[in-house]
Image (cartoon, rainbow, N blue to C red):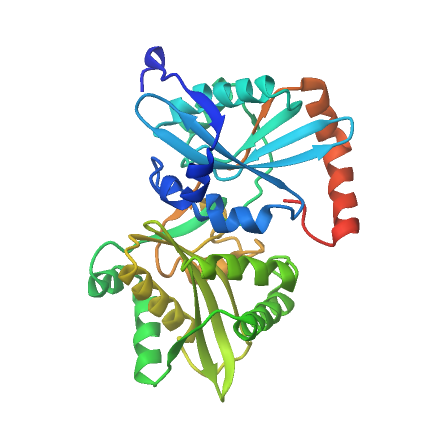
Length: 362
């Protein structure tokens, strides 16, 4: 878009009617929203270290519905975190949209010192230059899927199967031939405990990602499942669960959010088959893309020292391309306080929160 014709935006908090129909509004965003902006995720985060606000950013052409997570700190004031947002039509809309959000922060006298954003905009030199020109400062990435593998599942299943690598396709076919079976299981504590145990097993063996508490996952799964957006897939070996996956359908997007497995399994291709079963179920639910949710960045996909190397290898057997998003940027509203934040305040508050709650900060 020509910078001379920047759209004008306004920002406000959502009405009661909009909150009641939140998912309908978010999935109608320019990029179809994101499951981390959903009503279910709002319920997970609200009171779990964050105050959740629902933000509507509007211009003549469209409205964008975004979750805004807020933390309040002594001396510092408030931090606003636009998780996976703002969802805008064009990167040129970021600056005017944030100008409107900053104006809202001022009008409501919220004493916000920084607005943290992480729009689903694909990283490029041009994108980085535009975000910097908009006065944004690069910050460390927070979400695990700022680099990810996304598979187009809009074609019929047999075509999608043909589109994946021969290694993955052979693994799926062999697992099927050898009688490996994928079972979808109902939501509930028994299912949650089963998947959590498999996730613990994987983390203990590979140590790739820190695991949040069982209570956090149980709440997360429950919120998505109660809205018909969460699905569990399991494979058993010798009568015990050996592979498990939790997949979310949100609008036209599917996300492989959580998974785990036992080590040294005998069934070849079982984890590929679990994903293939999930992909077909997501197609039935109207999804056209499948996000494997987290890989090393494209530049490090072959780097064996990267903690996500093994995961990346598995996920890119379904889709070769790694999508790198721009990640986190800060819009600084209080320069002195933002400097304090970077110089150690964030580190201190994160440590205090972990000591107090045992949970993760973001």
